[in-house]
Picture (cartoon, one colour):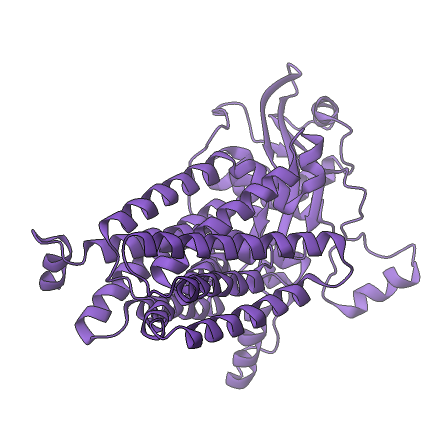
Length: 494
C-alpha cells in the first residue's frame, strides 16, 4: 500500500493525474447521479455517454488521427461536447413536441450511437486501439492540461449545482410549487441538463463511457437505499464514488487490471453490500414477513400482530439534541394536539386486517374510527419530543381530552386550558402529504408551540423538504421511514 501511495503522491507523482482525474469524474457523476436516478433518467445516463463516445470516434475519423495531446485532444473534446449536447437537445425537443414515450427516443439514440462508434472506428485505421482504451476507461494517459481543464469544469459544475440546488430540487419534483414561489422550473431543468451534458462529455473523453455511466448509477443507487434525506444521499453517493475511484486505482495497480472497470466494479460491490444491509435491517412489512416465517418454522410464536409496526426500530429511543425547540423546564408536560389535515385528502391508513376493513367498506356507522396519517404523525411527534428530552404527555391522553383537531394554534391553547391540560400545547397543520412515482414524499407540516396561560406563541417550525422513501411499500412504512426526518427538520435538529 505504501508503495502505491508513493507512486501516486511521491516526488515523481507518476499517477497523480490519473487518480485526481478519476476522483473528479467520480465525485461529479455521483452527485448528479442522485437526480438521474430519482428522476428516472437512467436510460439517458446510458445513451449520452455512448453519444459522446460516438462524437470522439467521428472526430478521429474526420481528422485521421488517434487521441493525442494538443490539437487532436481539443478536437476530440469538441466532438464529445457536440455529440452529447446535440443528442440531449434532440431528446428534450422530441419529448416536448412528440407523442411517443421518451424511452423510445433514448433507445434509438443508444442504438445509433453504438453503431456509429463501431463504424467510425472501423473506418479509421489508427483509431482502433485508442477507442478500445477509451471504452476500458484508461486514465493513465491524462496530461496536466487535461487535468486542469477537468478540474476547472468540475469545480464550476459543482459550484453551479450547489448554488442552484433549491431551484433544481423544486423543478425536479414539484414544478407547480416552484412557480408559486416565483421560480422558473424550465430554467432549472435546463441548468441541470447543461451540467449533466458537460460532465458526461468531459467524463467520456477522460475516463470512458463505462466509467461515466457506472458512477452516474451505482453510488446514487447505493446511497438512496439507506439515506434518510436527499442531502445525506448526496453525501453518501459522493463518498462511495470517491472511495471506489481511489480504491479501484489501488486494486487495479496491484493486480494489473484496467483502472476504469475496476473502479466501477468496486462501486458495484459497495452497492451490493448496502442492498444486503438494507434488506437485513429489521423493518415492518417486508422484514416482518421474514420474521413471521422464521417464527413459524421455529415454533416460537404463533403470529405477529399489527402492533409490531413501531417495535422493530430499536434506535428510536436514542437521545437527540433539542434543536430550535425552547427550554421548557418547569412549564409542565407538552400536549401534542391532533394534527389538522388541510391536504384535501382523507389520508386513511389501512389497518392490515381485512376483517376490520369490511365494516368501513360497507359504511357501518358503528365501525371503529379510521387511523389516519395525522394521527400517526401525532404519535411520532410525541416520540420525537421525548427523544429530545422534552416532558410530553401521551397521545392517547391528549386525544381523550382534545378529541378534535383545533382550528388554529390559539384555539389549541384555549381548548387545552378548558380541558385542564397544564403546560404548552404543540399544534400542527398538515398541508401536503404526497408520494411521487420516484418514491419521494412531498410533505408540508407546520408546527406551533403555544403557552395556554399567556396565549403566547413560544416556537414555530416547519418541514417541507422531500423525503426519500424508496424501500417503503405501504403508508405505514412511509411514515416509519419519513417520520423522524420530518420532525428533525421541523425541530431544527438534523
